[in-house]
Image (cartoon, one colour):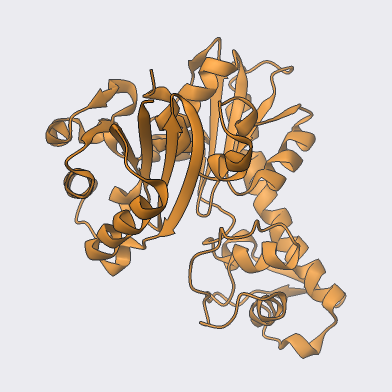
Length: 341
């Protein structure tokens, strides 16, 4: 049996997926905010290895180089590549350089532009193997990827974060870490429009928790006020966005307010998707392949676009018990599959 483990080093989480002879049997996520320093990430590797086990080959992608921990993205790529190689030694480690393929960690400096934030390319490459034409939509804790797949190839117009933002292929909104205030400039409440307070009182984790759309175990970040991750505490945080306390209105009122912010997020994703689709390379009959912790939101996006939805876990070889987390950790799972014989 050959074991390949895919790793996705993000700015907030470390994700890993284990493939045994090409079948994903385990996927895990460990909180590792890079703003707390590289020591926290090193510990996350240790914690993840306890849960994911050892492998014959480790393949690594990343987005964490964008963290302000580093003076530049080039510095971040080199630092994260070196740390991954150290923590995964003595096993063989390979870096995913997207359009440049797999490379050795010591080649990171010369390929940093290919390595930086290329995790979306791994997921899209795997989707292109299974789906001749589709739109991949991966909604994570922080961002949303919208990648066109055309005639079995990744057809993205952008590659870097800057290029993908401009093309609509990267939308900076996610299910957990996005600030609620970024989703709207005002909100309907008690029959009038209320301006929002521009403070990080609540996140989209609060919004989706209130609406029952947040999968168990995916919110590993501290809350803005340091209080509980309960529906009641989320209502209290959301109330602050309009200068109120939770007791000022009914549960229904707070659910409606949460729905407003969720609608703003969907609109942002739909706008990105329609910009991507306006390039007229993905035909009308092509499905949406949905991945990430925002799978429920992806289904709604597909419905509004008038397209069939296909779950990411349906297009990969994955054990039944690992289906959900393989989708939540799609780039890591994709890497493990791509590098398996």
